[in-house]
Length: 414
Image 1 (tube, rainbow, N blue to C red):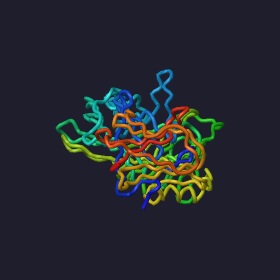
Image 2 (cartoon, one colour):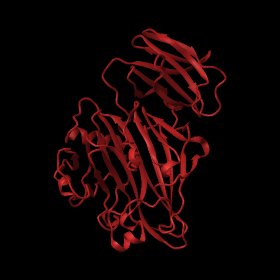
Image 3 (cartoon, rainbow, N blue to C red):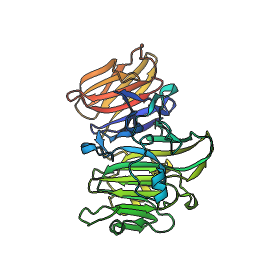
Image 4 (cartoon, rainbow, N blue to C red):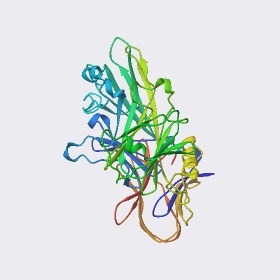
């Protein structure tokens, strides 16, 4: 029995026997950073800028807002502690909701760390701020079974007394598209101009940015999200980005105007912000908070609008009943199987293609070229070598002429 993992623009879909389907993807080194890959999506993170997620791509297209020109710090995805009004003693005494910038130890300075044991996760840890008494540890991994990324945050109390904070993930995407989340209790608050662009239908809160709207003040929306906890965004390229987390009880929201689902909007970017429970962290202890990211191509039959099909599709993805989408078109396929003559790989192409197929080690070095050149329509078979790279082995398929990666995934049991 085979499991369809994904689809690529050249018309390739990968079939792997379920028994050899790895659960976690091994990180690949990319300069001082690491890249995680699953289901056609890649996530990149390194120690700089407090281990901020510096890239999220789907089939090579960037989904995050990454403009750093002019010293801009609103880029990528980061983690904070809530509420913002408590970031410094001066902010707290003046009840400044817009306290800025974040303490450098939390979001600014480089973190330390790298690949964890077993080469399946990346962990970075910050230092403790003298006022916050808080150290944030971030662990990132890619899940091959459901084609998701897991961002696990530990908020560590570095003092000998209890402290109280709430976890907070802030992810920047380009403005535009449709952003939405399950409707919770109460009504959204915040910027009056932005609230005019919010609609509540089908049990979902929807926001479509109107760039012609005249806005003033803090351009932000604060809302309680409903169960199950998630926040989603569809861009103009029909790529769906979902952030899933545990729904936070209203009684556990951070003080002040903070709320579970927040959206900061400018002409250039939108910040998709999630907050967890505002809880005490015991002395010399920590609390953990997990956010899962899913990236999917929206099926052609679903419109980018406030509609039940879109809401239902997101619900299916976060519940695990949809792990990928297969388009209704002719596809080639790759099939891996063992035989008496040893391990072999069979490739079936739906049409003429110029490909290079290789195996890479955990560092991304393509040490073994399995096949390259012209592939006519039909089946092609070639042997996997007896000597394989040590550790996790990656299958990499490239377009031979451009060198662009068409597919990359971890193999187990080859």
